[in-house]
Image (tube, rainbow, N blue to C red):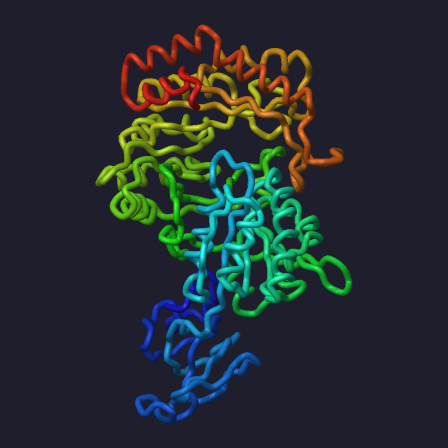
Length: 514
């Protein structure tokens, strides 16, 4: 079926007739204001349609006749009462799209999963290949990509750390393209690309997709790169042009499931999304700058269906919900847990959540545990009241303490993340970082140096997106101090003795494996 469902919703007057997404391939039917690639018959070319068909749709310059009287058409509008045959583009129509996770040092490969998400969204409109070049030498990666004869090369840039390696890779890719006498376009996307588009364009990218990529990528496949188009940052005669933000996909259930069949080496941890974005506005966080402040969920039934698919089709043993804020709607989490308990369940599900959301419903953590959500990372950032309040995260110490305590009774392994060096942090508060963390008593704690991420309010006044050397040193020292503290070792040892999933994670921490 033609991929139309992720495009912005039609107006009320346009939606009163069946949309293309509701009409199976090969079936004629009335449509209004549908966007996308379609196959149209000219007037009277098909007996069943007879004189009902009129060629009143503007014909794009890329349209042409093919055997049998079919007209290839990329139409912006299908006018009221126009009848046509709804079909996916044939293979000879489709462009070859190669989505690439570039070579880099990567501890956890989110990039390949996000490419599978994009591939699932556009595979009806393009012939998609996914290449995980994380561990390849740059020259080997370039050779492998160009061997696929791509029309479009999409490079994911997942974070600010990835932007330098991605820039160097794009430069090598441009050289390889020139030497091969081919002419594919290169587009870059992802969080890192959205933060740092200019260096990627200077390296040779034809365009950078900023923000959520599904709709913009589909439009690039169909229409090419248009300066000033929504969601695109590219060079023009006037310099770098940045279009307006692309409308977000909503509801998220309109998206196809990720094209995991294109991932050659999925690993042992399977990623999936249950929501996007966060409704909060912490000043240090880049998530709301990428997705906006509108938190958008997948439905509980969709989440449970995808979990079942991962288990039954891919034998998933560990699943990671890669949401920024899984528990933003506690009632939805309860509904998801109810669906998941119908089975089958993986051994363990990993998730991230805010402590105040987990604290808001007394039965939430028990339900999560019953659904095998047994490792939860909680973003604490700072337990100093002044620093936390200034950063926009007003969660008191007692909430963290109660949440981590409740996790222990529910066989959920807790991980707390802290940021060292947040603006406004005074030396006295900094000195208490570890003691505050020990009082909150999570099973594990990760202290990370503050990064002034571009686009965030806290980035103002910082010349670059680099951590302060002192913050780096202190973070390492705090991690070591927390891990080796007697209370931490005692808590983890008790968890190992009790057994269960939490005990398995505790055993790995004590062994220095995670």
